[in-house]
Length: 285
Image 1 (cartoon, rainbow, N blue to C red):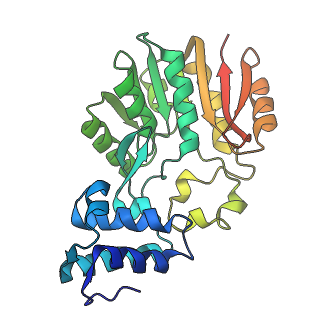
Image 2: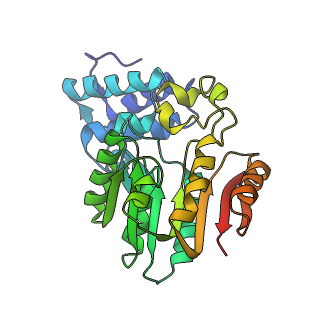
């Protein structure tokens, strides 16, 4: 454990911090490096090149505080205030879900679909805005909208859009309702909506810190997705593509929901890196 009044060098601080986090993180070594880099405001290369650098008492205290937050389970992205997604850094707060690698699969499908065309897209339930902002930044010809019911989440997303110089129009409201009210239509609809069955949410470690609003998908995990599917005809252009992130094992149930609500659509369930159901790719005829 690191005592706040200890005097130590970089190497010793990292070793003691990694030992403190060993029981709560499988990546304790890299975690403590990121925490110390945050305190010292240095890059990883500097940290590795200066293991004998002496830390002053204020630096030791600040580092010890961050390590203790991590030791009790607070997610590293919330402690750092930023997290990586698709080779970019994004602001994250407890008001938004932490970006995860699986969601990059959804973005990759969107990027391929857009290509170099000038189309209109919407990210439904944008959260931190990683999907909308990255899409707008990488496909600047695309007009990108983003919606969320959470005003604090939209504030985080707008901050990320400004940081990355991405042009995104944000709307507060439920799913596609803001676009319906303004009679806006899109050729691409993407969404990483809550999909965990409600009774499972409280049993998951993730629910201790991340917003339940972004996790709870109702009794079977598909309640919010059903409502989105019902709204799609009012917004989707001809030949539109809908991309949804889903929970492992939900592919069959999701395909049945699409068939019932969008009978002319063609749905394909794409796996994640572990081979589990992860992305529903729905093409409107």
